[in-house]
Image 1 (cartoon, rainbow, N blue to C red):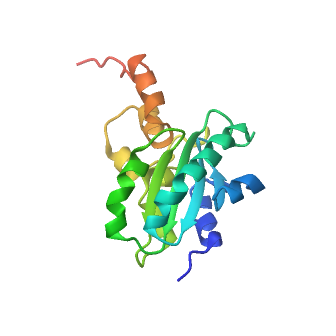
Image 2 (cartoon, rainbow, N blue to C red):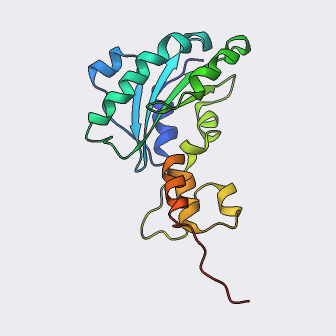
Length: 183
């Protein structure tokens, strides 16, 4: 089974992501697909093997950095770089920790289909399954786990759509305080 770009774009569009045209330089740098949501931009790279990621991630990260100049992406959206492989290789997966742990420029994601579908892989990554809030939709579902937690709505929204630095900044400034309850 070959990973089809249309399957990826269809699965992401169900979650509010829209495909953004890739510049030729980004394609030459290794990106396969670029999608944006109201809160993030995702550069996606389809690779033939897990081992290929170690040799390609640096060039792809440079292209992600360049996306800040793209008016669709801009400076405010979080950036994600996802590597998708049809079948993972456990022998090489241990070597990916350096890549996946590097948050310089963007967060890196690894999705090995291993006989599953791209839809299932995307569902397994919380930052890709988050639905953005729509102003009129006060009951919008984010992620079932977040919905079940007793947290302020703004914090739930930010956990689903914002990066850790932004959440920490708001936390330290007291933005997530609960109103005092009468007991």
